[in-house]
Length: 220
Image 1 (cartoon, rainbow, N blue to C red):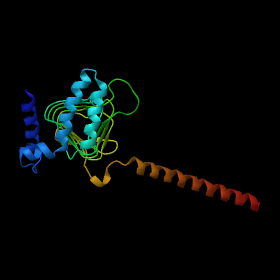
Image 2: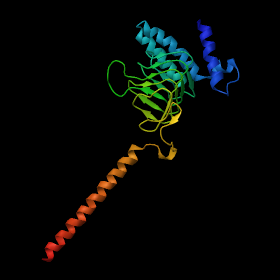
Image 3: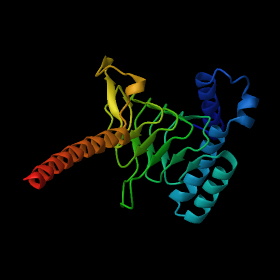
């Protein structure tokens, strides 16, 4: 596929995904997600030729212009749609397949200073919602959906929906794994506070017992 055909395909994806899109001219000039993808292809070409400085320079220019940071080493397939992409970060060893949708604030990042493959692999037709963090060398399966604000640290099966911190599967192959109640999403901070309160209550009870024992000894 030629360069201009590929660019037209990218713009057709915007028409399919965004009802606010009106004309090719508007999309060409105003969609930052599209600009970030196009600049990434240039940076990636330099990266593959081991011209790393030029590749990084182009990626930083793209970041400045679009608010989207894509490492030039990332491998991106066809028809990626980045919607309202401000704050999107895609790491060096990420692999993104075809027909993937990513919303603003998404991070496809690593978990530390490990070497080699350290960023996620995202399979065909996956959707990653606003603010989600997908971290480490994990795989997001085909047709998977990551809920907004989720933190995903483990592989996500195909045809499933994940929400929460840490991310948990709530729907798989169209079957609800558990009832999804948005006001009861996993909250490790609240769980830890509750555990600490229970420990405090136990300690207070022990102190009261000791006080009573000390009082009886004093009376004797």
